[in-house]
Image 1 (cartoon, rainbow, N blue to C red):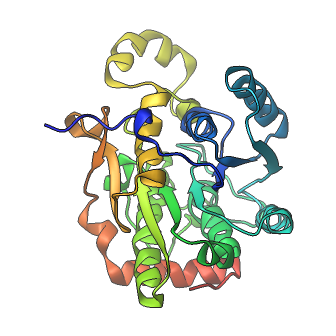
Image 2 (cartoon, rainbow, N blue to C red):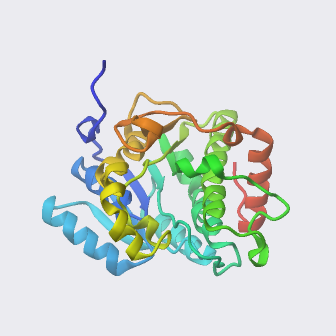
Length: 306
């Protein structure tokens, strides 16, 4: 049996430029730290600059001379996404890895600045727009990658193109909306890979999921008393953020993987473990849905690409 894939398998990343959304906490923070350890130039794309600075200070204490910087990005605002892309492209002429990691989970019904249902707007549309605005730089950079973070929750997600964003809260369920956004992440990944292949691009799109990891993503999922009572049981089901980050790290840097692949933990029900190739559900491979989702995403964000 081959050895488990760990952070020790990360190749030298000197000269690489990597954007990580949501880099200040959870698996984004762990990925930032490991990429920086290998010499990559990291752009921490975060909504809270103060939290990002605190995270960067912490990383710098462990890894002196980290080549990283913070650029503000609020995925709930298409204006902010455009502003981030402009700021990045003004400074950089290459983009090796775009790690679309940031996300929210199971929040009450709310809408973004642009009127999108918030989970779908941040988890999918924000990253769709960001990828589209940076696509020319990705295509110009040899062997570039787009990595989208999905979730086991994609398995109970479904698309309703007649009410894609639960207009006015109609039929809204916190977890159904989250599952829909995570299914969208996969449909987007696979469709982007098909378009890369059709264009003969020297770029690939890959997806990953962290299993059940101890991050702050589930803050809205249940009240504090629930976690206080059930934490001993919950902790046996979960893994650390460092372990949860490994599938996305592997997807971003393993030289032996192919576009259109999906990585997750190797344990029972993919809840925790070391990163391996896994398979998403049939709905995520529906090409007609992927095409329709792409078309609607372009219309909603007013960004067309590939």
